[in-house]
Image (cartoon, rainbow, N blue to C red; front, side, top):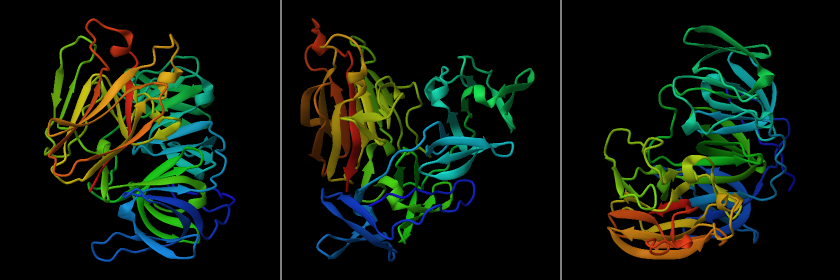
Amino acid sequence: MTPTILRLALAGALGLAAAPAAFADVEIVTVDGRRVRGEIREIAPGQGAEPPKLVLLRPDGTLEPFGLDSIVELLVQGSGAAGARDVEAVLSTGETIWGTLEAPEGDQGLRIRSASVGTVTVRLDQVRWVRFPARGGSVPPEDRVPPGGDILFMRDGTQTPAGTIERLDGTSVVASAAGIPEIRKPLGDVAAIYVAPIGEPPAAPPGSLSASLEGVDGSFVRGRIESFRDGLLGVETVSGLRLKVPVSGLSSVSFAGGRFDYLSDLVPVRVRERPNLYDPVVEHARDPSAERPRHFPPGTCSNYFPDRAYRGENSIRLGGKVHRKGIGAHSWVEITYAIGKRYRLFTATIGLDDSVKDLQGEVNERGSVIFRVLLDGTEKARFGPMVGSDKPREIEVNVSGAETLSLVVDYTGDPDPPKFEDTHIRDRADFGSARVIK
């Protein structure tokens, strides 16, 4: 199947440049572990409390309905080339647009042409970052950005004082800071624009069924799937945009909030850790019943990173696959969730993050950990030891009747006296796509 270009709308409706295929060739992965391939024929509206159903035409000619709440992932067959990735716009909601910068749009926006999202205008008040990777510069991860306001990171390695982006003036960016009414920089000299958050970004209602749609170039959006017609998914995003998305321009669609939850969307009640090998155990606790509970603020925990790999600098990568959802961790850490007897299975892809392989050093500097799963404080499963050269492993643990679930990344032996393989060096562990299933 020849892939067509994914077209989304952002900050206004966009036209489609090419007609999508009427039906989409996909493989569906369900919460029960089934993998079924076929063509999407329709998405039937839900009746009452029932969720919408995706109707699949199987290779044998039969039609089979799947409730969207029962689907873990939808894999699109025959996705196309990635296209240009000269500029990356990361929205405040975490959605990402990759493409080529065309021109500033008005005084508060950028127009980007993307292989996945077409030509789109991105307003600065919708974004957290605009990055130009090929321009170099020294662009830190978000948790290391100085607080206090918007910042321009320049390709020569310098940066402007934290302040406010005032406007995009033709080919320039104009900002202001305390005591400096105007800072004007050529847009071509900017390596990245950081826009400081104001308030909480839009989010899906707790417990609602939502989908993350991954484009062929790495762009992705999140929202609620409402319909399917002529190869187009009708999607309402968390920010309220109504989109018509060609399935053939996607690489995958993953779901949450149905018959399973991602652990990274739950708030741990407790994190216990040793920041370094011989440090005493430090405990961080949270009240999950508090209004608008959030994860521990960045920098609170040394060894726990929801939806990110070690130190929160990169996405979780295991065996070459990127997991947008999951838990990044480092030995030694114990992460405890109150699951309240609501779930029956815990599943994840475990292993040491691919970043371990990217590090230079002696061959035995490869990390070495044991993954442990505790229910109500009692160990129920142990996996490993695993090292950085091991292939990722799919795990499944029965959690029926458990009040709490704890994930532990442990040393592989007695570190006193230490042997290199028993220490915490390079123990960058991942629980990729970690889920609890109802």
